[in-house]
Image 1 (tube, rainbow, N blue to C red):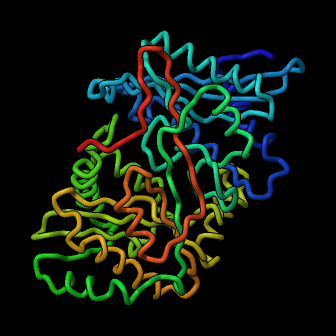
Image 2 (cartoon, rainbow, N blue to C red; image 1 turned 90 degrees about the vertical axis):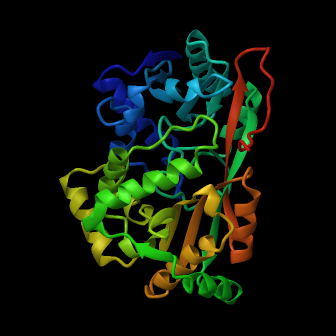
Length: 386
């Protein structure tokens, strides 16, 4: 086996193509868009390079065929605020060969040790947590857009190498018929009757305002997470532009209290219903195919990608108000039958309980693992800062 750093078009091509070999007989698999993967490692497009660094490798067998890939990265800015110096690994793909997997893990581990990192978390993203995060360990079907999907045998690789489960992330689903509407209607009616509280759908013509409101809520709600990095309105606008074709404004809800932005519930079309037809490519013909499926094929699934409320406004019924607002909009779309909510960590039991109360059922579980790189570091499961 030969491990080569991704430095040129040939190795990047193999890095992008390898999953098509791994999953060639897996009917559940939907290729990520090559564009989305390339953007993660583009210094001009990914703002994390302003305060971080990343490296990629591709592994070849004796016949020079690609059999594995991986990336390692560091967010130096997040490590300034962290007691533990954390490095990341992700975008791991490998044939069913534990020696090949360990060769890839070793490359990440040694690189991160040279950078004085104390632990290695993976598989994670060199970017936001709403994409390419966690190893799928349950529910190997219906992979969602920007969600990690992998063969079940990857779990043995991680466990055997000495990774320990840092936290679990559950993805839940609720149907129109299974949603417990009556249980929450009284709470929603009470919240809606409060003149200080209002709920507002996304207005694309006011993208600047909504981007600023999103940042204010996100940075307040997620500031208690380890290795948190504040979002800028410019990066939010960039994400909004990238996802404009799969965002339906009425399925995006913002909550305000006395005109202060306090919460959001962001939902998109389950884009893999479309992308499964494109094989990861967005050349001109596939762009036309995308537009055809997007605007002439009725969607059947929605995906809630992020739900956040400023800490001082939690548990006042605003969560229920936003959920009911979205549910009422879904009822206006007869083709949409299922609604997916991703992801909620096991470190957030209150949100887990809310999902159960709504009538949700768990359909997928991902796990984020941690590997200690130094013997003097103690392993602890992830917990929110109090």
